[in-house]
Amino acid sequence: MQSLGKAGSPGGGQERRSQKHPLTRGLSVWACCPAGCVWGQGLAGTDSPQASLRATQHGKTAGGTRGRRRAPLCVLHCEPKEEGEGRAVSHSPQLSPGASHAAGGSDSDTREATLRFSEARNEGYSLYTRTWLGYLFYRQQLRRARNRYPKGHSRTQPRLFNGVKVLPIPVLSDNYSYLIIDTQARLAVAVDPSDPQAVQASIEKEGVNLVAILCTHKHWDHSGGNRDLSRQHQDCRVYGSPQDGIPYLTHPLCHQDVVSVGRLHIRALATPGHTQGHLVYLLDGEPYKGPSCLFSGDLLFLSGCGRTFEGTAETMLSSLDTVLGLGDDTLLWPGHEYAEENLGFAGVVEPENLARERKMQWVQRQRMERKSTSLPTKPRCLSSHSARPPWGRSAPTTRS
Image 1: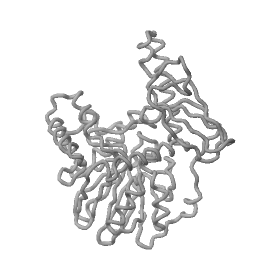
Image 2: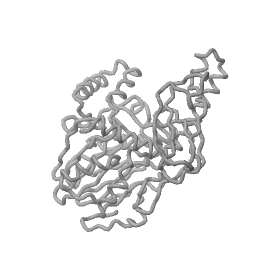
Image 3: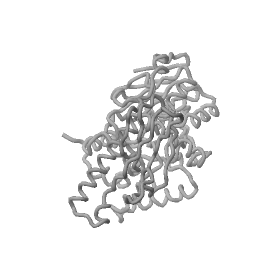
Image 4: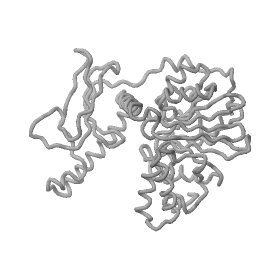
């Protein structure tokens, strides 16, 4: 068990500040981002992220080459600030799956196009997680979200349990960060602080001292604020899985490790699938005589689960079994506002599920008023069997 207090040492702070993000050298590829858009990107010899990022309009051909097929791609170019820093390289766009049939191609052409598209997605994911391109993409998302949602994408409310406060913070376009606060000791833990500005504003408003960051996984929309917040709060430690390459990680965690901050006892559970080192965090409700709280990152949402970027379906189901087997009063605090989309998909699979329909109606009322679906008046519990998504009921709870 690892314990923190007001006078806790950051431990490894100097090493944290000296770490640098991976750089791209001599890169010239076609790939796509995790959202499915295709990147046309060329860099040569760049030693720092000094390239300006711009997105071309959907449907344009790369490099403006005439006579080539137009494809609905989101093409990102890097343009060096000064001569000699590198040059942008343009390539012809790849066709997305189904384009061959639209053009009168054969089944073999379709399979080949699908394979190329799949390879491009894999390469794009590698760029997003391992190079500066992912960081630049995150910074672009951050700027756009701050301009579009100056007060956050959703209206949230905190939940208070006998001296422990859980505060959801809407960040980016649909993410949630969280502050878990021991109100007596005035100590706070941040979960997935992707927008350091929004999280810091909440810290100052609550008048607490940030002593720990719990990062569920490495993706920038969950870890992007680690650097700024850990520098601003000298006693702050950054926790997460050592398998995931989390930015500015200072204190690695393994399955069942416990982080203690005041009366807060938070257990890390290994849940690979979305990423190899994905962790979820379970706040034990016993010390404050309240319900336990699960901060699920990108493993589990209301009626949905995350993509398997770095695992198999079997791995993801095993991880889901881990959290679906928690106590009936466990409250779910997810990493994204995906409730309406997930329930819409569940309605296609099970159109006659009345529990799903009732939940969908409630979610739609919330979203009409831009209210979060993680609210104290309607806690997201894991207990209702019929209200779980289809895979949550069809999958066995134990596996050999």
